[in-house]
Length: 260
Image (cartoon, rainbow, N blue to C red; front, side, top):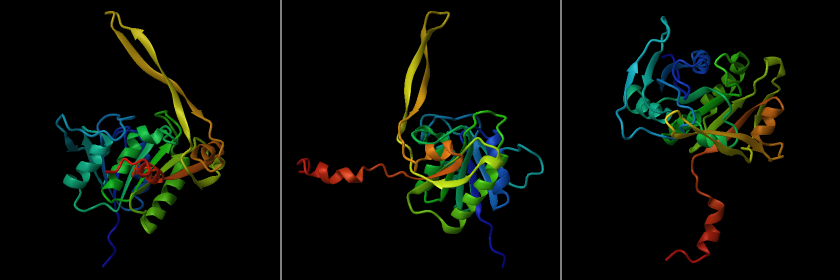
């Protein structure tokens, strides 16, 4: 009997019609049986939010005729999409979940806020190997062609070799022509952050409102970080774990006599 194709769940946070998920689809169709379950509208910056106080809709859609795969548009968050896909839509547990390709960076501290990565993390929680892909270009006209080679290579590796329990991959792709991308670097997350402030304004009715603004600050000078890799023309691959326990602090905390 012919070997069953890998079942690949595809999702994102930019919405089911975003160019990035279409580019990801084109690669995944070469590697397995694809099912898309993605938000019906942009969900950037939603982190790991889930829908618990509202109804959740998930309906089949046809984005382009003659596609052989199935697509579902979900009213919820990226994490919702993975939950409902695995519990209500798919005929078996997927062999892989890929999220993206996000329009914009999810390197360094951005992984905390990312809906793209939260979808991958949710899959990881459910025991599914998962990868989040992001391109350092926020434009809806972003060129994803140079990224496809690396998306395919990393995906093939995970399909072949798997990932450790509790680990997912955060992949960021530089905004460069194919000839300028030097290759792939496995990295750690840079110790960087956002210096934020609120732009306060007043509407015509006299009510104050705010826009969150800020600048990204990276003071991490290490050459083993995702920020260094991206700045120097590499695709960054960071293994991310969703166990947030600070294991190295347990012994010291125990020594303080808190246990009774």
